[in-house]
Image 1: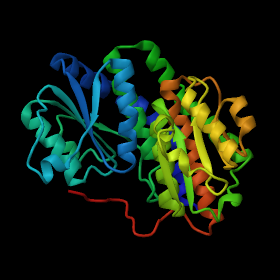
Image 2: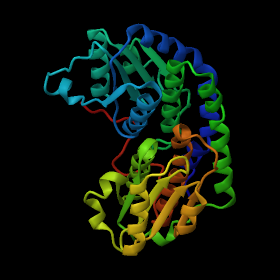
Image 3: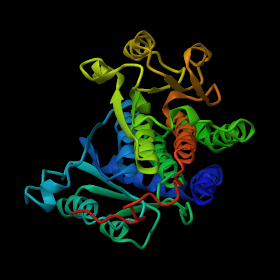
Image 4: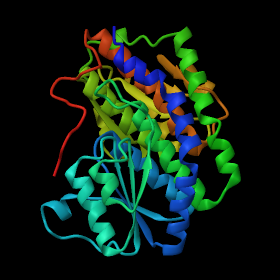
Length: 346
């Protein structure tokens, strides 16, 4: 049995509530600086799970704040000495430890050029926090397992807080306040009926498909499965999936779809139909009864969650499925082989 990973997962409602309570003034201060700067775009530097949080930021700032958002390529700075023009940008660095030199380098370069720079990190004394003009601490407390869970959802919350402050939207803040409770509801649901991934323990490959805000969830769930169960979980936008990877589908390749009810995507429906036609086992993370009725394994979460906030809740069943799959394969998700809590890349 895993204790550390499970402890981190269960602490998410409390961690997100604490972040909301303590850092709203910081988010509003950063938003004021961004409005004064009048940026033309946002660039986000991150690695690993933090990079999946950045994918959420692409949709969040794009839809809510109408900003172009690019994921940074840190090697432009650290290896090619070819820093892009960042003076008209908001540069956000996201890192649990705040120690990765390449992420720090992007933020430092952005600040040198006069961009608004923001560090989202669990360590307010880290090199990343010191490199940025503004630091938004996550307040998650120590994360006990190597695989990030509560830090990931806190990063999503921090980005959502920045977006809400930038939009100056009281309604958005009201909706944000409901998120810790919805995650608690989801955890209670699985406490009563735990995930069972036994039927997948001998599979060595799995496809994870979704779209929109929850492309971040697709990528994060795939990463959790890979690092805790050593299964090759390939993440795809459902649109990209139909452009070629759909050829992989057969009865030996399970498909996990992430599909909240808030928005319909025809290509995601097509991926589900194709899975049925090819005899591929279907796992569904959803709050849509119609989709859950079609799935071989259901991973539900509560209905009534605004789409822009659904990634913070939808990822929780994925975290629990990854844990269950690791256990079914005789592994523990606490300390995956070859990984450490702090990874330094340049």
